[in-house]
Length: 228
Image 1 (cartoon, rainbow, N blue to C red):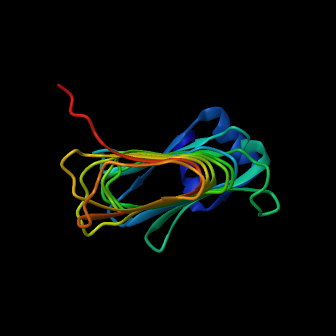
Image 2 (image 1 turned 60 degrees about the horizontal axis):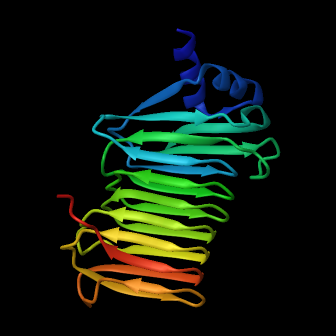
């Protein structure tokens, strides 16, 4: 009953610093029915954002309480989207470290923004927008449209064979890009690096549009090796 009451308090809006400490000690996982939710918006400062798609019919949210006492956390549904935020007490994204681990059904769109934390996506088929100022972006078994941007960090991705109507954009100012696609995928690559090496195993000009840009780093776009 106590966990249920805590979850209802979290769903209602912003959690105070004291309530955040309770979340830290109990490690509650909050569950949201996904029928009326079209997507998820996540914003943190200096902590991991981890999103995984599963066959479950509901969305599960776990707060990662590295420094939960120093921040306010917002977990709510607004206009059909699940909103997850971790801010410091002044309402700004400063030196706090509280992230989220999210499990959701396939097909939901996701926006994840963090100032200096890493972002990871696993088995996601909905559209993704991921942005971090100083952190790495990891992408595993991705099949939806994607826009991934980091100013200082690496982007590593393993992709399924998305529809050619989808678009994949990978951009880092200071970091490497390494992306793997199925051997039989038809990829139209637009890749360039100012100070780095470019390795591209796809020579076609038609197919899935893939844009990769790095100012200071290597870019590698390769074909997945089939397992024997």
